[in-house]
Image (tube, rainbow over all chains, first blue to last red; front, side):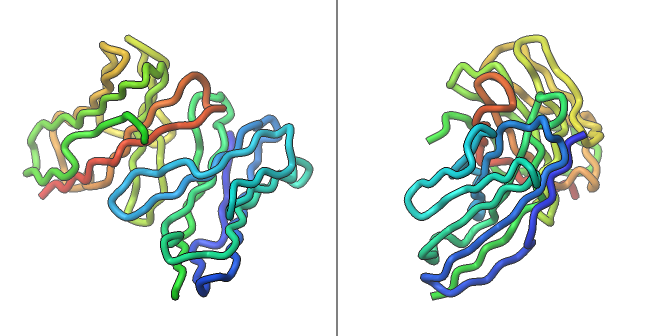
Length: 112
Length: 113
């Protein structure tokens, strides 16, 4: 079945720096790759997603890149701010296409 | 803002009690899911539903059960709560397949003492 690996598990940056979180997946048929942000006491919320027919997608300070050949995708946050501090999850559809399988999460801390 | 609601937000209950965690969505989504989130924050799928009268077990074995009598409602029940059931439970819904955005509720933090 699909397996999603996420690194690093924790990431600390200074305000204004960039942050990069990487995920690898195992099922070459996967075609949808979302990123979720979970703040304390809340449920995960989608921040950006990418489909397998494009290599990169940007939305203001966040971007996602996809390398289908290597089966990995990355979240890039530029000009980080303290409010970016949260747990970030990557995901991909399971092999049956019935639900999303999530990475183990990355705790991002942005210090001012 | 996602229109998916979970109640209660927090629940502390004694061992052996029966509990039902409520989840409702007003988006008309066919697919709904329950995830269990462990202390390390990892999300594990425990149940999902394609639509009314459809329920399936997820990747992580769970002693809980679910029902889907109405499109908008997907409650999770534990017949006899145990301390090992202490966890965060997250409900989600999506429009069609797993290839579309899943919207999450705020979660229920369950503690069994």
